[in-house]
Length: 307
Image (cartoon, rainbow, N blue to C red; front, top):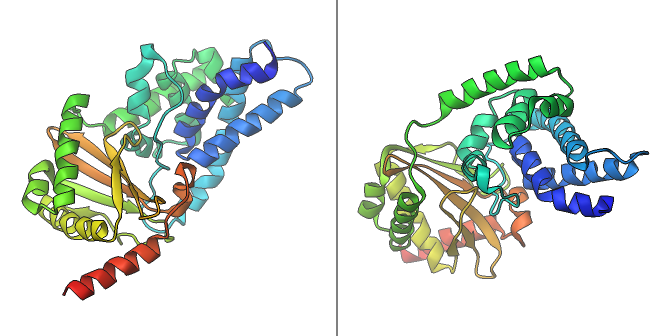
Protein backbone atom coordinates (compact mmCIF):
# COMPACT_ATOMS: atom_id res chain seq x y z
CA UNK A 1 0.00 0.00 0.00
CA UNK A 2 1.37 3.42 -0.93
CA UNK A 3 1.84 6.20 1.61
CA UNK A 4 -1.04 8.15 0.08
CA UNK A 5 -3.33 5.12 0.36
CA UNK A 6 -2.34 4.56 3.99
CA UNK A 7 -3.04 8.21 4.74
CA UNK A 8 -6.48 8.11 3.13
CA UNK A 9 -7.34 4.99 5.12
CA UNK A 10 -6.24 6.67 8.38
CA UNK A 11 -7.75 10.08 7.60
CA UNK A 12 -11.07 9.50 9.47
CA UNK A 13 -9.17 8.51 12.62
CA UNK A 14 -6.79 11.45 12.34
CA UNK A 15 -9.62 13.94 11.87
CA UNK A 16 -11.55 12.50 14.80
CA UNK A 17 -8.51 12.79 17.09
CA UNK A 18 -7.83 16.38 15.99
CA UNK A 19 -11.47 17.47 16.27
CA UNK A 20 -11.78 16.23 19.85
CA UNK A 21 -8.57 18.00 20.86
CA UNK A 22 -9.42 21.24 19.05
CA UNK A 23 -13.23 21.46 18.97
CA UNK A 24 -13.07 22.89 15.45
CA UNK A 25 -13.78 21.25 12.10
CA UNK A 26 -11.63 23.56 9.98
CA UNK A 27 -8.77 23.50 12.50
CA UNK A 28 -8.92 19.70 12.61
CA UNK A 29 -8.85 19.45 8.82
CA UNK A 30 -5.83 21.77 8.71
CA UNK A 31 -4.05 19.66 11.35
CA UNK A 32 -4.68 16.48 9.34
CA UNK A 33 -3.36 18.13 6.17
CA UNK A 34 -0.24 19.34 7.98
CA UNK A 35 0.34 15.81 9.36
CA UNK A 36 0.16 14.44 5.82
CA UNK A 37 2.71 17.00 4.57
CA UNK A 38 5.11 15.96 7.33
CA UNK A 39 4.49 12.28 6.56
CA UNK A 40 5.18 12.90 2.87
CA UNK A 41 8.33 14.88 3.64
CA UNK A 42 9.74 12.23 5.99
CA UNK A 43 13.11 11.05 4.58
CA UNK A 44 12.39 7.45 5.59
CA UNK A 45 9.14 5.49 5.55
CA UNK A 46 7.88 5.20 9.15
CA UNK A 47 7.45 1.63 10.39
CA UNK A 48 3.87 2.41 11.37
CA UNK A 49 1.97 5.02 9.40
CA UNK A 50 -0.75 4.99 12.07
CA UNK A 51 1.68 5.68 14.92
CA UNK A 52 3.54 8.38 12.97
CA UNK A 53 0.46 10.19 11.69
CA UNK A 54 -1.43 9.93 15.00
CA UNK A 55 1.57 11.40 16.82
CA UNK A 56 1.94 14.16 14.22
CA UNK A 57 -1.72 15.19 14.26
CA UNK A 58 -1.73 15.14 18.07
CA UNK A 59 1.36 17.35 18.37
CA UNK A 60 0.07 19.77 15.76
CA UNK A 61 -3.30 19.92 17.53
CA UNK A 62 -1.66 20.59 20.91
CA UNK A 63 0.29 23.51 19.39
CA UNK A 64 -2.84 24.91 17.72
CA UNK A 65 -4.85 24.53 20.93
CA UNK A 66 -2.26 26.45 22.94
CA UNK A 67 -2.47 29.41 20.59
CA UNK A 68 -6.26 29.10 20.25
CA UNK A 69 -6.71 29.42 24.01
CA UNK A 70 -5.52 33.03 23.88
CA UNK A 71 -8.10 33.78 21.16
CA UNK A 72 -10.85 32.04 23.12
CA UNK A 73 -10.15 34.21 26.17
CA UNK A 74 -10.94 37.24 23.97
CA UNK A 75 -13.97 35.60 22.32
CA UNK A 76 -17.18 37.63 22.27
CA UNK A 77 -19.89 35.82 24.23
CA UNK A 78 -20.07 32.07 24.98
CA UNK A 79 -17.71 29.84 23.01
CA UNK A 80 -19.08 26.56 21.60
CA UNK A 81 -17.35 23.93 19.45
CA UNK A 82 -17.90 23.97 15.70
CA UNK A 83 -20.92 21.74 15.04
CA UNK A 84 -20.03 18.32 13.66
CA UNK A 85 -22.78 16.55 11.72
CA UNK A 86 -21.00 13.25 11.07
CA UNK A 87 -17.99 11.75 12.81
CA UNK A 88 -16.03 10.05 9.99
CA UNK A 89 -14.35 7.48 12.24
CA UNK A 90 -16.31 4.39 13.22
CA UNK A 91 -15.32 1.59 15.54
CA UNK A 92 -18.14 -0.73 16.66
CA UNK A 93 -16.13 -1.79 19.71
CA UNK A 94 -15.83 1.79 20.96
CA UNK A 95 -19.00 3.31 19.53
CA UNK A 96 -20.31 4.42 22.94
CA UNK A 97 -17.07 6.21 23.88
CA UNK A 98 -16.82 7.81 20.44
CA UNK A 99 -20.39 9.12 20.52
CA UNK A 100 -20.11 10.43 24.07
CA UNK A 101 -16.77 12.14 23.50
CA UNK A 102 -17.99 14.16 20.52
CA UNK A 103 -21.01 15.70 22.25
CA UNK A 104 -20.85 19.43 22.91
CA UNK A 105 -21.13 18.78 26.65
CA UNK A 106 -18.05 16.51 26.56
CA UNK A 107 -16.08 18.89 24.34
CA UNK A 108 -16.82 21.75 26.74
CA UNK A 109 -15.60 19.60 29.62
CA UNK A 110 -12.43 18.88 27.65
CA UNK A 111 -11.92 22.65 27.42
CA UNK A 112 -11.24 22.65 31.16
CA UNK A 113 -8.21 20.39 30.71
CA UNK A 114 -4.70 21.49 29.83
CA UNK A 115 -3.73 20.78 26.20
CA UNK A 116 -1.59 17.81 27.30
CA UNK A 117 -4.32 16.36 29.54
CA UNK A 118 -6.81 16.77 26.72
CA UNK A 119 -4.58 14.99 24.20
CA UNK A 120 -3.80 12.14 26.60
CA UNK A 121 -7.49 11.69 27.48
CA UNK A 122 -8.54 11.62 23.82
CA UNK A 123 -5.89 9.12 22.77
CA UNK A 124 -6.19 6.86 25.81
CA UNK A 125 -9.83 6.99 26.89
CA UNK A 126 -11.55 7.61 23.57
CA UNK A 127 -9.37 5.80 21.06
CA UNK A 128 -7.79 3.22 23.41
CA UNK A 129 -4.16 3.90 22.47
CA UNK A 130 -1.63 2.13 24.68
CA UNK A 131 0.47 4.28 27.00
CA UNK A 132 3.66 3.72 24.93
CA UNK A 133 1.81 5.18 21.89
CA UNK A 134 0.36 8.03 23.96
CA UNK A 135 3.78 8.87 25.42
CA UNK A 136 5.34 8.92 21.96
CA UNK A 137 2.56 11.13 20.60
CA UNK A 138 2.73 13.81 23.31
CA UNK A 139 6.45 13.64 23.99
CA UNK A 140 6.21 12.70 27.68
CA UNK A 141 7.18 9.61 29.66
CA UNK A 142 4.67 6.81 30.16
CA UNK A 143 4.60 7.57 33.90
CA UNK A 144 3.81 11.22 33.20
CA UNK A 145 1.07 10.21 30.76
CA UNK A 146 -0.52 7.92 33.34
CA UNK A 147 -0.66 10.84 35.79
CA UNK A 148 -2.11 13.11 33.10
CA UNK A 149 -4.73 10.45 32.30
CA UNK A 150 -5.74 10.13 35.96
CA UNK A 151 -6.15 13.90 36.33
CA UNK A 152 -8.10 14.16 33.07
CA UNK A 153 -10.44 11.29 34.01
CA UNK A 154 -11.08 12.90 37.41
CA UNK A 155 -11.97 16.27 35.84
CA UNK A 156 -14.19 14.69 33.21
CA UNK A 157 -16.01 12.43 35.68
CA UNK A 158 -16.68 15.36 38.04
CA UNK A 159 -18.45 17.32 35.32
CA UNK A 160 -20.56 14.56 33.79
CA UNK A 161 -24.23 13.96 34.62
CA UNK A 162 -24.99 10.83 36.63
CA UNK A 163 -27.88 9.68 34.46
CA UNK A 164 -28.01 10.07 30.70
CA UNK A 165 -30.89 9.42 28.34
CA UNK A 166 -30.87 6.51 25.93
CA UNK A 167 -31.06 7.21 22.22
CA UNK A 168 -34.76 6.36 21.85
CA UNK A 169 -35.76 8.66 24.73
CA UNK A 170 -33.67 11.51 23.32
CA UNK A 171 -35.20 11.19 19.86
CA UNK A 172 -38.75 11.07 21.21
CA UNK A 173 -38.17 14.20 23.31
CA UNK A 174 -36.49 15.97 20.40
CA UNK A 175 -39.42 15.22 18.08
CA UNK A 176 -41.85 16.73 20.57
CA UNK A 177 -39.56 19.71 21.11
CA UNK A 178 -39.26 20.63 17.43
CA UNK A 179 -43.00 20.15 16.94
CA UNK A 180 -43.72 22.56 19.82
CA UNK A 181 -41.08 24.94 18.44
CA UNK A 182 -42.80 25.06 15.04
CA UNK A 183 -46.16 25.70 16.68
CA UNK A 184 -44.84 28.32 19.09
CA UNK A 185 -46.39 26.23 21.87
CA UNK A 186 -45.13 27.71 25.14
CA UNK A 187 -46.81 25.10 27.36
CA UNK A 188 -45.62 22.25 25.14
CA UNK A 189 -42.04 23.52 25.26
CA UNK A 190 -42.12 24.18 29.00
CA UNK A 191 -43.22 20.60 29.66
CA UNK A 192 -40.10 19.26 27.90
CA UNK A 193 -37.57 21.54 29.57
CA UNK A 194 -35.76 20.97 32.85
CA UNK A 195 -36.57 23.59 35.49
CA UNK A 196 -33.03 25.00 35.24
CA UNK A 197 -32.66 24.55 31.48
CA UNK A 198 -30.15 26.87 29.80
CA UNK A 199 -30.23 28.28 26.27
CA UNK A 200 -26.75 29.21 25.05
CA UNK A 201 -25.94 30.92 21.76
CA UNK A 202 -22.55 31.32 20.08
CA UNK A 203 -22.44 34.22 17.63
CA UNK A 204 -18.84 35.21 18.31
CA UNK A 205 -19.76 38.86 17.84
CA UNK A 206 -20.32 38.14 14.14
CA UNK A 207 -24.06 37.41 14.25
CA UNK A 208 -27.03 38.35 16.46
CA UNK A 209 -26.65 36.50 19.74
CA UNK A 210 -27.86 36.33 23.30
CA UNK A 211 -25.88 38.56 25.64
CA UNK A 212 -25.67 35.64 28.06
CA UNK A 213 -27.23 32.24 28.67
CA UNK A 214 -30.99 32.30 29.27
CA UNK A 215 -31.95 30.16 32.27
CA UNK A 216 -35.25 28.61 33.41
CA UNK A 217 -38.04 26.66 31.73
CA UNK A 218 -40.59 29.47 31.61
CA UNK A 219 -38.18 32.10 30.25
CA UNK A 220 -36.61 29.78 27.67
CA UNK A 221 -39.99 28.42 26.50
CA UNK A 222 -41.40 31.93 25.99
CA UNK A 223 -38.29 33.13 24.14
CA UNK A 224 -38.23 30.12 21.80
CA UNK A 225 -41.98 30.30 21.16
CA UNK A 226 -41.75 33.97 20.24
CA UNK A 227 -38.70 33.80 17.96
CA UNK A 228 -38.94 30.62 15.91
CA UNK A 229 -42.47 31.01 14.50
CA UNK A 230 -41.48 34.52 13.34
CA UNK A 231 -38.46 33.05 11.58
CA UNK A 232 -40.71 30.48 9.90
CA UNK A 233 -42.91 33.29 8.57
CA UNK A 234 -39.94 34.66 6.60
CA UNK A 235 -39.21 31.19 5.19
CA UNK A 236 -36.51 30.03 7.61
CA UNK A 237 -36.76 26.24 7.62
CA UNK A 238 -35.30 23.54 9.84
CA UNK A 239 -34.17 20.02 9.13
CA UNK A 240 -33.67 17.49 11.89
CA UNK A 241 -30.09 16.30 12.11
CA UNK A 242 -27.79 14.89 14.73
CA UNK A 243 -25.36 17.58 15.84
CA UNK A 244 -22.28 16.25 17.65
CA UNK A 245 -24.08 12.96 18.16
CA UNK A 246 -27.07 14.63 19.86
CA UNK A 247 -30.58 15.41 18.64
CA UNK A 248 -30.56 18.71 16.80
CA UNK A 249 -31.39 20.61 13.67
CA UNK A 250 -29.93 22.82 10.97
CA UNK A 251 -31.81 26.05 10.22
CA UNK A 252 -31.64 27.55 6.72
CA UNK A 253 -32.81 30.74 5.06
CA UNK A 254 -35.15 30.78 2.05
CA UNK A 255 -32.17 30.20 -0.26
CA UNK A 256 -31.09 27.10 1.62
CA UNK A 257 -28.07 28.76 3.23
CA UNK A 258 -27.11 27.68 6.76
CA UNK A 259 -28.31 30.11 9.42
CA UNK A 260 -27.49 28.18 12.59
CA UNK A 261 -27.53 24.79 14.28
CA UNK A 262 -29.33 23.73 17.43
CA UNK A 263 -28.26 20.81 19.65
CA UNK A 264 -30.16 19.41 22.65
CA UNK A 265 -28.75 17.88 25.83
CA UNK A 266 -31.28 15.45 27.31
CA UNK A 267 -31.02 14.34 30.93
CA UNK A 268 -33.49 12.64 33.30
CA UNK A 269 -36.35 12.87 30.81
CA UNK A 270 -35.97 16.61 30.19
CA UNK A 271 -34.00 18.90 27.90
CA UNK A 272 -31.22 20.29 30.08
CA UNK A 273 -29.32 22.52 27.65
CA UNK A 274 -30.04 23.97 24.21
CA UNK A 275 -26.96 25.14 22.29
CA UNK A 276 -27.18 27.28 19.16
CA UNK A 277 -24.18 28.02 16.95
CA UNK A 278 -24.78 31.02 14.70
CA UNK A 279 -21.20 32.33 14.29
CA UNK A 280 -20.75 32.20 10.47
CA UNK A 281 -17.07 31.24 10.88
CA UNK A 282 -18.21 27.96 12.46
CA UNK A 283 -20.79 27.02 9.83
CA UNK A 284 -18.92 27.26 6.52
CA UNK A 285 -18.00 23.56 6.45
CA UNK A 286 -21.73 22.78 6.06
CA UNK A 287 -22.19 24.88 2.93
CA UNK A 288 -23.01 28.50 2.03
CA UNK A 289 -23.81 30.56 5.15
CA UNK A 290 -26.83 32.85 5.51
CA UNK A 291 -26.63 36.53 6.45
CA UNK A 292 -27.86 36.32 10.04
CA UNK A 293 -27.99 40.11 10.43
CA UNK A 294 -30.28 40.40 7.39
CA UNK A 295 -32.54 37.65 8.78
CA UNK A 296 -32.66 39.45 12.13
CA UNK A 297 -33.68 42.72 10.45
CA UNK A 298 -36.36 40.95 8.43
CA UNK A 299 -37.78 39.27 11.54
CA UNK A 300 -37.93 42.64 13.32
CA UNK A 301 -39.69 44.27 10.37
CA UNK A 302 -42.22 41.42 10.20
CA UNK A 303 -42.90 41.77 13.93
CA UNK A 304 -43.44 45.53 13.68
CA UNK A 305 -45.81 45.16 10.73
CA UNK A 306 -47.78 42.48 12.61
CA UNK A 307 -48.18 44.80 15.55
